[in-house]
Length: 321
Image 1 (cartoon, rainbow, N blue to C red):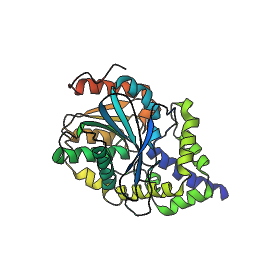
Image 2: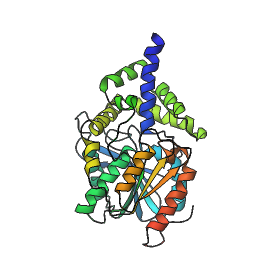
Image 3: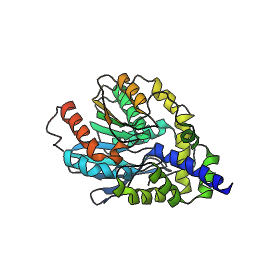
Image 4: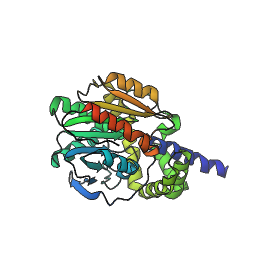
């Protein structure tokens, strides 16, 4: 009986973190930490690296943080003559997590757009993973009608953008009662260890770093609450439904990347989203799951390089991998 009480919450955590994707913490010397004051109650954490002029904005998945992009950074920096900005979404990572119930998709869209305006990031390439991809897609669709030229290109990784059902346990992590039970019966390090190992990620060398990162993120009850509320707003509050109902023609070069074994968003739904975006390209990365850029960055970087070299014609911005 006691074992069942312990393993059921752990199963919920495992599935929840599979939706978020795994991360690891690499050497951050190339990225300088900064913050942007969005409002009196929300200060947005971000970091910046790279010496080029082309702005690239990275948006992480639900429950994660900007460090989740670490595995992709060496390869991306090697092909990209650009300035990379990695942003923590509301209530995630180092960004404020006020208890004000303002965790909708549109609120995160507003925050990222305000950040881009403050930093004068016009003509940016947006790269988003999972929930961060939904934020990026919504920004690009807004910009098409309101601020043409704000977004120059779009890369969506494992992104939910069409109506779908998520696995039962995964969807139920958003409920506060489940979250409190899990937090009460486990420690952040145990939850992180189980989630990372159950994900069966290929980059075994980064396991320890991923566990350390998630243990740090989940040690803060305010961020755990914010993550659950963000999920509720997206799944129950109409965020996904509203995004799915929009005309997905972004009017900018768009690349979609899916892991072959992504059982959360899934290849089927990524194909459906790709068909709804005129002129988009879909690349499926073999032997990977929901976070191919973390699991096998060496396979993802050439796909991004090929897309950027063939999809953009305004000067020698991109190098060879």
